[in-house]
Image (cartoon, rainbow, N blue to C red; front, top):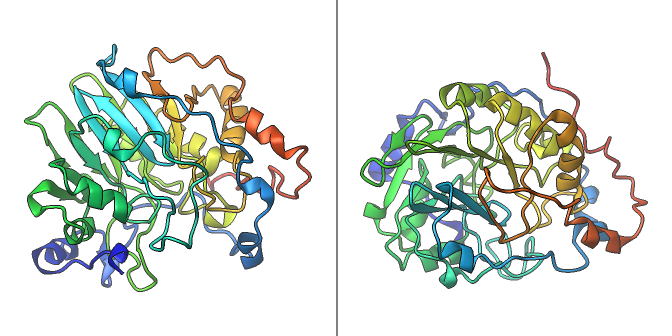
Length: 368
């Protein structure tokens, strides 16, 4: 099955083996300290017997970004959340697309696996001209075969963690369009006007049971002369957030995952409360929550990640940006006057009588 991708070989594999992250034939979270350890395993029935509240009963409201994309951002920095972890970032006059997924399912199969709640905000071929595609890791909800096959027909370059380039080349992306980085490596893809740095993430990789951790996973920092943006990809709470914050103080925009959360996964996914802790370790900044609102990937209500984050953020003194799908955001200018646009859809379920209380979804505080 082509969607499974391809294992690295040759010079690519030798470079992977030279990474400090490579241990016993695969990548590991070397150099990181988990700040919230793994819980007991999730009961299988909990995942396989979903409640009706795990999917919205009506389409989420969408904004058309095409007109906004036709003019440059006033402040030099703009982001458009296109769903899950797909964000179009405009910085230093460049357009960078993160983890593009336009497929109907986060799966190698067309009829099995998590299905999108609704169609993408805009068709892939209606995107404005892109300058760069940035990938965090090779899981299906972040690296999609059909989407990459379409993008392979363009001239847009890719930046990805070590090993991911093997998938891209197998799907038709020319090797000279691919840059693969290890943690703390950086590159200047546009003659010096933007620096892209691979930064740690506490996660894992793999597209089949036999390919676990054979590619690296990363978060990313995009830095221009006047703006610095952090894209977190997928990660559990880790000591690496503090180091990233120390190396890149004064973040202008922070994107962290808040969805697909379960206490059993606290070492590999943040969830809303640990996202707030991660943001604090990074040194703060406007938070754009990602990794929610598109796929049913856990056992919580579809709206629970954003609702929990929204309720806690004000008391934590955190500025959360909550744009509609497709709504463009300039962090300095965005003023969210809503009381939570997702709530109108969530109310269609009626009163919540499930046993998925906030306490069940809340991990204990990290160890001192």
